[in-house]
Image (cartoon, rainbow, N blue to C red; front, side, top):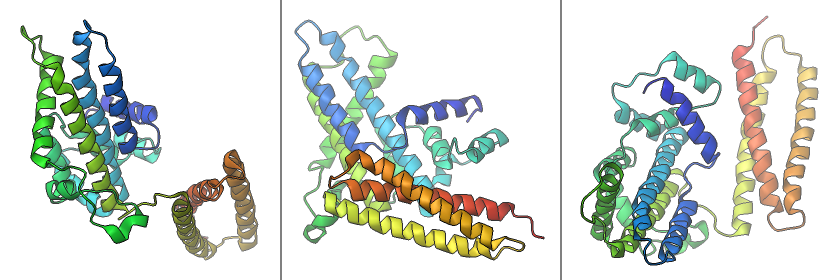
Length: 314
Protein backbone atom coordinates (compact mmCIF):
# COMPACT_ATOMS: atom_id res chain seq x y z
CA UNK A 1 0.00 0.00 0.00
CA UNK A 2 1.41 3.35 -1.03
CA UNK A 3 2.03 5.98 1.62
CA UNK A 4 -0.35 8.37 -0.14
CA UNK A 5 -3.19 5.95 0.59
CA UNK A 6 -2.78 6.14 4.37
CA UNK A 7 -4.53 9.50 4.54
CA UNK A 8 -7.36 8.09 2.43
CA UNK A 9 -7.94 5.40 5.06
CA UNK A 10 -7.87 8.00 7.84
CA UNK A 11 -10.39 10.11 5.92
CA UNK A 12 -12.55 7.00 5.37
CA UNK A 13 -12.54 6.27 9.11
CA UNK A 14 -13.37 9.87 9.99
CA UNK A 15 -16.36 9.84 7.66
CA UNK A 16 -17.69 6.60 9.12
CA UNK A 17 -17.08 7.30 12.81
CA UNK A 18 -16.15 4.84 15.54
CA UNK A 19 -18.75 2.19 14.68
CA UNK A 20 -17.09 0.03 12.09
CA UNK A 21 -19.34 -2.81 11.04
CA UNK A 22 -22.67 -0.96 10.63
CA UNK A 23 -24.58 -4.15 9.72
CA UNK A 24 -28.05 -3.16 10.91
CA UNK A 25 -27.71 0.42 9.71
CA UNK A 26 -26.60 -0.65 6.23
CA UNK A 27 -29.37 -3.25 5.93
CA UNK A 28 -31.85 -0.48 6.75
CA UNK A 29 -30.17 1.77 4.18
CA UNK A 30 -30.79 -0.87 1.52
CA UNK A 31 -34.47 -0.88 2.46
CA UNK A 32 -34.56 2.89 2.15
CA UNK A 33 -32.79 2.76 -1.20
CA UNK A 34 -35.38 0.33 -2.54
CA UNK A 35 -38.24 2.49 -1.29
CA UNK A 36 -36.82 5.50 -3.12
CA UNK A 37 -36.08 3.49 -6.29
CA UNK A 38 -39.63 2.11 -6.41
CA UNK A 39 -41.03 5.62 -6.10
CA UNK A 40 -39.30 6.85 -9.26
CA UNK A 41 -41.86 7.77 -11.95
CA UNK A 42 -41.87 6.17 -15.37
CA UNK A 43 -39.16 7.57 -17.60
CA UNK A 44 -36.54 7.56 -14.86
CA UNK A 45 -35.35 4.00 -15.52
CA UNK A 46 -31.82 5.21 -16.23
CA UNK A 47 -31.52 6.34 -12.62
CA UNK A 48 -32.33 2.80 -11.49
CA UNK A 49 -29.00 1.72 -12.99
CA UNK A 50 -27.25 3.54 -10.16
CA UNK A 51 -28.88 1.21 -7.62
CA UNK A 52 -26.51 -1.75 -8.18
CA UNK A 53 -23.54 0.61 -7.87
CA UNK A 54 -24.87 1.85 -4.52
CA UNK A 55 -25.57 -1.71 -3.35
CA UNK A 56 -22.00 -2.86 -4.01
CA UNK A 57 -20.64 0.25 -2.32
CA UNK A 58 -22.76 -0.61 0.72
CA UNK A 59 -21.37 -4.15 0.72
CA UNK A 60 -17.80 -2.86 0.48
CA UNK A 61 -18.24 -0.43 3.38
CA UNK A 62 -19.67 -3.24 5.51
CA UNK A 63 -16.99 -5.78 4.56
CA UNK A 64 -14.03 -3.50 5.16
CA UNK A 65 -15.49 -2.72 8.57
CA UNK A 66 -15.85 -6.43 9.32
CA UNK A 67 -12.27 -7.20 8.33
CA UNK A 68 -10.80 -4.34 10.37
CA UNK A 69 -12.89 -5.18 13.43
CA UNK A 70 -12.02 -8.88 13.42
CA UNK A 71 -8.28 -8.27 13.06
CA UNK A 72 -8.16 -5.55 15.72
CA UNK A 73 -10.41 -7.32 18.23
CA UNK A 74 -8.87 -10.81 18.61
CA UNK A 75 -5.36 -12.22 18.21
CA UNK A 76 -6.56 -15.27 16.28
CA UNK A 77 -7.94 -13.05 13.48
CA UNK A 78 -4.89 -10.81 13.65
CA UNK A 79 -2.73 -13.87 12.92
CA UNK A 80 -4.98 -15.06 10.11
CA UNK A 81 -5.01 -11.56 8.63
CA UNK A 82 -1.33 -11.93 7.84
CA UNK A 83 -2.28 -14.42 5.12
CA UNK A 84 -4.30 -11.73 3.35
CA UNK A 85 -1.36 -9.35 2.88
CA UNK A 86 1.58 -11.68 2.21
CA UNK A 87 4.47 -9.63 0.91
CA UNK A 88 3.05 -6.30 2.06
CA UNK A 89 5.44 -4.14 4.07
CA UNK A 90 4.54 -1.66 6.77
CA UNK A 91 6.78 1.39 6.58
CA UNK A 92 7.68 4.05 9.13
CA UNK A 93 4.93 6.35 7.89
CA UNK A 94 2.31 3.75 8.75
CA UNK A 95 3.97 3.10 12.11
CA UNK A 96 3.71 6.82 12.87
CA UNK A 97 -0.03 6.77 12.10
CA UNK A 98 -0.47 3.78 14.43
CA UNK A 99 1.49 5.55 17.17
CA UNK A 100 -0.84 8.54 16.84
CA UNK A 101 -3.81 6.14 16.88
CA UNK A 102 -4.93 7.32 13.47
CA UNK A 103 -4.76 3.83 11.92
CA UNK A 104 -4.75 0.19 12.98
CA UNK A 105 -3.41 -3.00 11.47
CA UNK A 106 -7.03 -3.92 10.78
CA UNK A 107 -7.42 -0.74 8.74
CA UNK A 108 -4.34 -1.62 6.71
CA UNK A 109 -5.54 -5.14 5.90
CA UNK A 110 -9.14 -4.10 5.25
CA UNK A 111 -8.06 -1.60 2.59
CA UNK A 112 -5.34 -3.81 1.09
CA UNK A 113 -7.54 -6.76 0.10
CA UNK A 114 -9.55 -6.95 -3.10
CA UNK A 115 -13.34 -7.18 -2.75
CA UNK A 116 -14.29 -6.77 -6.40
CA UNK A 117 -16.34 -9.95 -6.80
CA UNK A 118 -18.12 -12.62 -4.77
CA UNK A 119 -15.26 -15.10 -4.97
CA UNK A 120 -12.76 -12.65 -3.48
CA UNK A 121 -15.24 -11.65 -0.75
CA UNK A 122 -15.89 -15.25 0.30
CA UNK A 123 -12.19 -16.13 0.08
CA UNK A 124 -11.21 -13.20 2.29
CA UNK A 125 -13.84 -13.92 4.93
CA UNK A 126 -13.05 -17.63 4.82
CA UNK A 127 -9.40 -16.85 5.61
CA UNK A 128 -10.42 -14.98 8.74
CA UNK A 129 -13.49 -17.00 9.72
CA UNK A 130 -12.64 -20.61 8.90
CA UNK A 131 -15.56 -22.43 7.20
CA UNK A 132 -17.27 -19.10 6.59
CA UNK A 133 -19.72 -20.45 3.96
CA UNK A 134 -21.00 -23.07 6.44
CA UNK A 135 -21.30 -20.42 9.15
CA UNK A 136 -23.13 -18.11 6.75
CA UNK A 137 -25.62 -20.84 5.83
CA UNK A 138 -26.45 -21.41 9.52
CA UNK A 139 -26.30 -17.78 10.65
CA UNK A 140 -29.21 -16.56 12.78
CA UNK A 141 -29.81 -13.74 15.30
CA UNK A 142 -27.86 -14.34 18.50
CA UNK A 143 -29.67 -12.31 21.14
CA UNK A 144 -28.51 -13.56 24.51
CA UNK A 145 -32.08 -13.66 25.85
CA UNK A 146 -33.03 -16.22 23.17
CA UNK A 147 -30.06 -18.56 23.68
CA UNK A 148 -32.25 -21.39 24.99
CA UNK A 149 -34.05 -21.46 21.62
CA UNK A 150 -30.94 -21.78 19.44
CA UNK A 151 -30.43 -22.68 16.68
CA UNK A 152 -33.04 -20.41 15.14
CA UNK A 153 -34.06 -20.62 11.47
CA UNK A 154 -31.21 -19.33 9.27
CA UNK A 155 -31.38 -15.81 7.87
CA UNK A 156 -30.44 -17.10 4.40
CA UNK A 157 -32.98 -19.74 3.43
CA UNK A 158 -31.59 -20.36 -0.07
CA UNK A 159 -27.80 -19.97 0.03
CA UNK A 160 -27.16 -20.82 -3.63
CA UNK A 161 -29.79 -18.33 -4.79
CA UNK A 162 -28.28 -15.53 -2.67
CA UNK A 163 -24.75 -16.25 -3.91
CA UNK A 164 -25.92 -16.31 -7.53
CA UNK A 165 -27.73 -13.01 -7.04
CA UNK A 166 -24.65 -11.44 -5.45
CA UNK A 167 -22.49 -12.66 -8.36
CA UNK A 168 -24.96 -11.03 -10.75
CA UNK A 169 -24.94 -7.84 -8.68
CA UNK A 170 -21.16 -7.52 -8.90
CA UNK A 171 -21.26 -8.28 -12.62
CA UNK A 172 -23.89 -5.61 -13.24
CA UNK A 173 -22.02 -3.08 -11.13
CA UNK A 174 -18.80 -3.71 -13.07
CA UNK A 175 -20.43 -3.30 -16.47
CA UNK A 176 -22.45 -0.21 -15.53
CA UNK A 177 -19.45 1.43 -13.86
CA UNK A 178 -16.77 0.70 -16.44
CA UNK A 179 -18.69 0.29 -19.70
CA UNK A 180 -21.44 1.93 -21.72
CA UNK A 181 -23.31 -1.14 -23.05
CA UNK A 182 -25.15 -0.50 -26.34
CA UNK A 183 -28.17 -2.50 -25.16
CA UNK A 184 -29.78 -2.65 -21.70
CA UNK A 185 -27.70 -4.82 -19.39
CA UNK A 186 -29.98 -4.64 -16.38
CA UNK A 187 -33.68 -5.46 -16.27
CA UNK A 188 -35.44 -3.26 -13.73
CA UNK A 189 -37.30 -6.26 -12.32
CA UNK A 190 -33.93 -7.68 -11.18
CA UNK A 191 -33.33 -4.86 -8.71
CA UNK A 192 -35.47 -6.15 -5.80
CA UNK A 193 -33.82 -9.57 -6.01
CA UNK A 194 -30.30 -8.10 -6.05
CA UNK A 195 -31.12 -5.79 -3.15
CA UNK A 196 -32.64 -8.61 -1.11
CA UNK A 197 -29.52 -10.70 -1.62
CA UNK A 198 -27.25 -7.86 -0.49
CA UNK A 199 -29.37 -7.22 2.59
CA UNK A 200 -29.55 -10.87 3.66
CA UNK A 201 -25.82 -11.34 3.10
CA UNK A 202 -24.98 -8.31 5.26
CA UNK A 203 -27.40 -9.36 8.01
CA UNK A 204 -26.22 -12.98 8.10
CA UNK A 205 -22.54 -12.03 7.98
CA UNK A 206 -23.09 -9.51 10.77
CA UNK A 207 -24.35 -12.28 13.05
CA UNK A 208 -21.45 -14.55 12.07
CA UNK A 209 -19.13 -11.78 13.29
CA UNK A 210 -21.15 -11.35 16.49
CA UNK A 211 -20.73 -15.06 17.19
CA UNK A 212 -17.00 -14.90 16.45
CA UNK A 213 -16.31 -11.90 18.68
CA UNK A 214 -18.95 -12.06 21.41
CA UNK A 215 -20.93 -15.29 21.18
CA UNK A 216 -24.14 -13.31 21.68
CA UNK A 217 -25.33 -9.77 22.36
CA UNK A 218 -28.17 -8.50 24.55
CA UNK A 219 -31.37 -7.45 22.85
CA UNK A 220 -33.44 -5.88 25.61
CA UNK A 221 -32.63 -2.69 27.48
CA UNK A 222 -32.33 -4.58 30.77
CA UNK A 223 -29.95 -7.13 29.28
CA UNK A 224 -27.88 -4.39 27.66
CA UNK A 225 -27.57 -2.55 30.97
CA UNK A 226 -26.49 -5.73 32.74
CA UNK A 227 -23.99 -6.49 29.98
CA UNK A 228 -22.46 -3.01 30.20
CA UNK A 229 -22.26 -3.36 33.98
CA UNK A 230 -20.28 -6.57 33.55
CA UNK A 231 -17.99 -4.88 31.03
CA UNK A 232 -17.38 -1.97 33.39
CA UNK A 233 -16.45 -4.33 36.22
CA UNK A 234 -13.98 -6.10 33.95
CA UNK A 235 -12.39 -2.79 32.94
CA UNK A 236 -12.19 -1.70 36.59
CA UNK A 237 -10.50 -4.98 37.52
CA UNK A 238 -7.89 -4.37 34.82
CA UNK A 239 -7.39 -0.84 36.11
CA UNK A 240 -6.87 -2.11 39.65
CA UNK A 241 -4.23 -4.57 38.40
CA UNK A 242 -2.49 -1.83 36.41
CA UNK A 243 -2.50 0.51 39.42
CA UNK A 244 -1.01 -2.25 41.57
CA UNK A 245 1.90 -2.61 39.14
CA UNK A 246 2.29 1.16 38.80
CA UNK A 247 2.43 1.50 42.59
CA UNK A 248 5.47 -0.80 42.70
CA UNK A 249 7.60 1.18 40.27
CA UNK A 250 10.94 2.23 41.80
CA UNK A 251 10.94 5.82 42.97
CA UNK A 252 7.20 6.33 42.54
CA UNK A 253 5.53 8.79 44.91
CA UNK A 254 2.75 6.56 46.19
CA UNK A 255 0.90 9.32 48.02
CA UNK A 256 0.88 11.51 44.93
CA UNK A 257 -0.26 8.55 42.82
CA UNK A 258 -3.12 7.81 45.22
CA UNK A 259 -4.24 11.44 45.14
CA UNK A 260 -4.05 11.50 41.35
CA UNK A 261 -6.10 8.33 40.98
CA UNK A 262 -8.75 9.59 43.39
CA UNK A 263 -9.03 12.80 41.36
CA UNK A 264 -9.28 10.79 38.15
CA UNK A 265 -12.06 8.57 39.57
CA UNK A 266 -14.05 11.65 40.63
CA UNK A 267 -13.57 13.22 37.20
CA UNK A 268 -14.56 9.98 35.40
CA UNK A 269 -17.74 9.68 37.46
CA UNK A 270 -18.62 13.31 36.72
CA UNK A 271 -17.98 12.77 33.01
CA UNK A 272 -20.21 9.68 32.98
CA UNK A 273 -22.88 11.66 34.83
CA UNK A 274 -22.82 14.38 32.17
CA UNK A 275 -23.03 11.92 29.28
CA UNK A 276 -25.83 9.89 30.88
CA UNK A 277 -27.78 13.03 31.77
CA UNK A 278 -29.05 13.00 28.17
CA UNK A 279 -31.39 10.17 29.24
CA UNK A 280 -31.91 11.26 32.86
CA UNK A 281 -34.73 9.29 34.47
CA UNK A 282 -34.96 6.80 31.59
CA UNK A 283 -34.25 3.08 31.46
CA UNK A 284 -31.14 3.70 29.34
CA UNK A 285 -29.39 5.76 32.05
CA UNK A 286 -27.46 2.85 33.70
CA UNK A 287 -26.27 1.54 30.33
CA UNK A 288 -25.13 4.94 29.02
CA UNK A 289 -23.39 5.70 32.32
CA UNK A 290 -21.58 2.35 32.38
CA UNK A 291 -20.68 2.63 28.69
CA UNK A 292 -18.98 6.00 29.22
CA UNK A 293 -17.25 4.97 32.45
CA UNK A 294 -15.96 1.75 30.85
CA UNK A 295 -14.52 3.74 27.94
CA UNK A 296 -12.80 6.17 30.31
CA UNK A 297 -11.47 3.30 32.42
CA UNK A 298 -10.09 1.62 29.33
CA UNK A 299 -8.32 4.86 28.38
CA UNK A 300 -6.92 5.15 31.91
CA UNK A 301 -5.44 1.66 31.71
CA UNK A 302 -3.78 2.63 28.43
CA UNK A 303 -2.38 5.79 30.05
CA UNK A 304 -0.92 3.82 32.93
CA UNK A 305 0.59 1.23 30.60
CA UNK A 306 2.28 4.00 28.62
CA UNK A 307 3.58 5.65 31.79
CA UNK A 308 5.00 2.36 33.05
CA UNK A 309 6.70 1.67 29.73
CA UNK A 310 8.28 5.14 29.78
CA UNK A 311 9.21 5.09 33.48
CA UNK A 312 12.86 5.82 34.18
CA UNK A 313 13.94 3.74 37.17
CA UNK A 314 15.89 5.60 39.83
